[in-house]
Length: 282
Image (cartoon, rainbow, N blue to C red; front, side, top):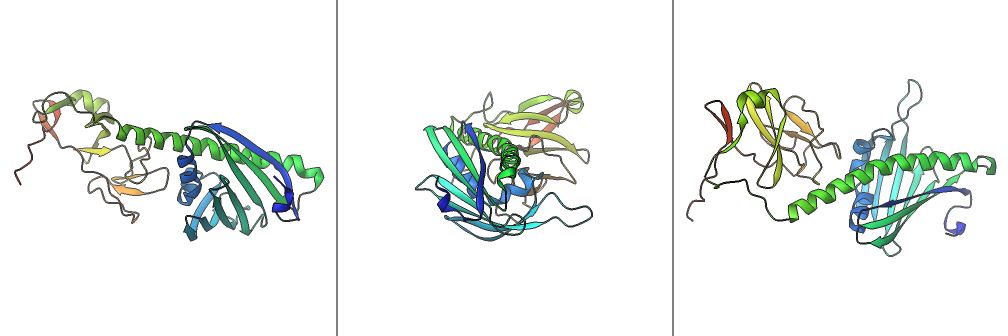
């Protein structure tokens, strides 16, 4: 890359390369997904307020996680400009600490789900003496960010593939009750995860009542498997969407909700998923 494409005051301090088993679609989706930054990358970012967005990219006020002793976290205005033609995007710090910095990320495809990214760091105000040390700091930052991003992209692709596959059915007739197990055994092993109609669900006790909820966020298919339940709600670790387990409502105001769970019944010391009833005639 020619240095003429960036500010004359900026110095190329190094790059970061990483090969991943993800698709170009997932990578572009991740680049445009500004909302995940303070949740998935909470060690780097504390908040984000969108200013503008579109197919071209996005611009936002971004709070940094590291703060001065006793002070408020610093904020930057960050703009990500996506260039699909050249398979790259440019992350520019417009205001705040590091203003004038640009990070150019290029994507190289080796197969449908096999690509490599290279992020080049152009930083203003860096002397030749500090070039290598500054580059190492940015490379370490990107290593951590992509550790988290790659895990999210792989999990999302797995969930998409699973939904697109043949629909799984529980054994037996749809009109039969399906036994989950003895109540005594389930109580001793909560939370209890199971699959029903091809989807993952979790069984818990809530206020002494049985409660079943999906383990897949309806927004972008994030997993609730490691999410902590607080006051009858579950929060997606990817974007911070919070849902009521009893009503399914998104308490964060997003236009999505949890799917209705299968109904469970307790009978003679066993817990069952209640059998589905035939659809009524139109």
